[in-house]
Image (cartoon, rainbow, N blue to C red; front, side):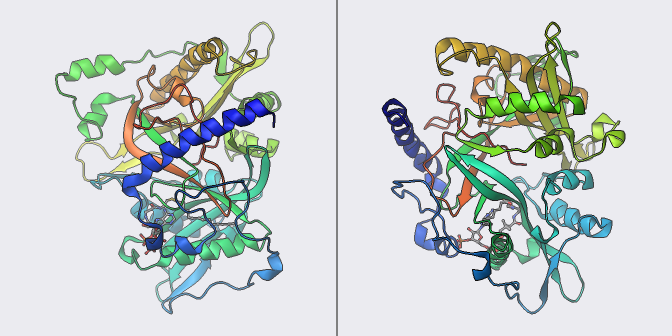
Length: 457
Ligand SMILES: CCCCCCCCCCCCCC(=O)SCCNC(=O)CCNC(=O)[C@H](O)C(C)(C)COP(=O)(O)OP(=O)(O)OC[C@H]1O[C@@H](n2cnc3c(N)ncnc32)[C@H](O)[C@@H]1OP(=O)(O)O
């Protein structure tokens, strides 16, 4: 690394150190009170990190016990076969009834079988990494945690890793220290495959986030959001004002925009790889993974025809003269169930996923004024069209994080900052902080943007 780059990196890291500790100060406990996490290979808060790399000394899979951790007598481990409809149903029942809910318990995620087939059956998935706990007597599934294999790239280092998601414990069995047992068991099962690092995200502050991003929301169907209590009417505004403010055209603007097809994979993949290389933390996709994540886990003949049931939506922009793909974007659908509302039972939610564009490729410094202006203009157009497409498939709100280059378009496209923050963690790895697209006061940071280039479901 040359001197200039090193200086820039150090400057950036110092600034972010400030950001992260301030951002998470109120929510975190003292290190000694993290009874479980203080025993794990994770960095402690405010640790003075000198070099990046694994925390534990190297181990071999043979050093790891071959059999599962002991559980309380009334429970048993249950590896979930998600190809088995009944077992898959057990998982989505558990999650739909017990996964993340908002503070007032008015909404909860509505995971579907199709969503799980996409999220959990990524190339290289292993049944033994879908870990459940059942009540021995009744067979009821009361806890779940999952891992999928990924290759992470953190700055110069490529890290064979897993992504941990969908940790869930039945509401009636909370605060009984079952989560640490699940986490240790999935660690064991992953370690047996010679993988020692994991990426995970949580709203909760644990030791220690490598980055923190903020959730942002772009209303698409303001009146429904207002009806169900997702959105308030700001003081001095009328409903008519709000509807006018968030109104969207019916048709797309970007010339050459069309749904991504299998024939686009090769070119879209190259464009994507090039765009992603700007970020500090990315997932390196194989072509097979790229195809899975952007075309969905369905064969061509079975592509979902009913757009309102589709899970992942991917679009490319084809230049009419050269026939080249210049841009690509994607979003996915994960609706909320609305609890106890007479008029509405579901809230359609779109999440911005990955995107790529060649808009700033020709500039030497992507942070120069000209490069920033070019990228901002293009992202406004592209994500502006994504929002229209989402609205046209009956989504009511479109969510994005402050990750990637998102802070360039969030304000222009009327995404409002939400209450929620998402912390990014890497297990068994010391890493310098990564910009999350936020200033110290938690406002969007369009100057530094974010160096988080991974999007987790
Ligand atoms: C190399 C391979 C490595 C693989 C593993 C990598 C690590 C993966 C880590 C997991 C990544 C998951 C990514 C996602 O899926 S994030 C989504 C998490 N799920 C939900 O929020 C759904 C609703 N909530 C629940 O189901 C429960 O409240 C959960 C299961 C979250 C905790 O259950 P419960 O409330 O009954 O608590 P407990 O008494 O059993 O346990 C208390 C201990 O657990 C620590 N805790 C609480 N919440 C989380 C959390 N979200 N990540 C990690 N740790 C968490 C907590 O600080 C305390 O430890 P300590 O403070 O004493 O130290």
